Image (cartoon, rainbow, N blue to C red; front, side):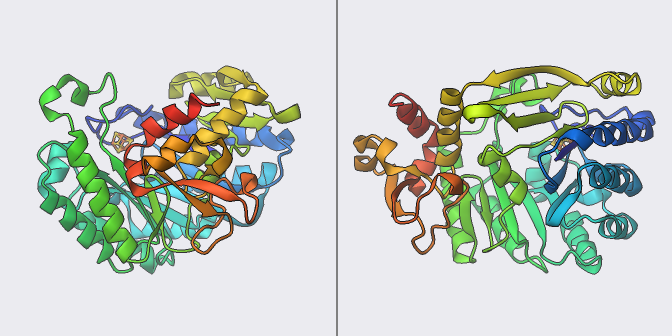
Length: 382
Ligand code: SF4
């Protein structure tokens, strides 16, 4: 289950997500609409939720009781599987001990903090408003609330003007947090159309700079015991994000809230994907009137779905069946052969596709840098 919380206190100038900074008056009404939509999922019949992810936006901006109330409605409608992973995305400066205590009481098991950088100057370059001290403070409060290391930090690298030394300092400081995160996501800054960043070419990131920073991150995180399991994601063993893996495995998920996407498998390997209306006002009005909040959807034929499965799996440590990969990608050092089930190879996100003992093609670190090109060359073969 994904729950979209479309509210932020400030708009970061690289962000293209569906989120608003002037809708505080809608918080309670919106949460009620989410509870109503969740209650209507009683006939979802895909089994109890194995993960619930509150994303945004800034879920931690709104009163914690609104989130735990939505979680209670989800639990009542579809149930939560034993050991379900329940994550709330937080901006460090919005976190309080009282909010974290309510999350813990209400069944949240994992936090995801948007840290981005630990260097004040880089946060300014990114147009972020929190201070670097807020991250350590939030992590400390989370530990006191019982979350321990069960948290993720989101980092962004490659802002124009960020030096390699500053990125190195960010990596050192996040690894030095007490407790250190069990999971880290590091994303290359991307220029999204329509954002303020997109109108300032002098602030565009450089490919080579981002490649250097990716290599630096992978080396530092590997040395600290984190395994990459998707191009932008590393975790301590056993702490991969179950919710993300569901997406990469093309699992079934229901989206609650405006802009939320859903996916449901159909007969014979087909599937349907659909998404809700974009604005919170429209979403509330539709749900309150008893109508579906769905905006549009698409049917995915079996062949399309198989191709998509390979594209998603290619980005993970599980890789794709070696037999579907053109030989030249091996010769170019972009992928390497790994036996499924071999040490260090967990079957990955593509576990459903992996047959123990069969060869898998997994991106090398050079392949990860050039993953889009690898995907195009693989797709052209299919
Ligand atoms: S806090 Fe996150 S969702 Fe909100 S504007 Fe910034 S990047 Fe976008």
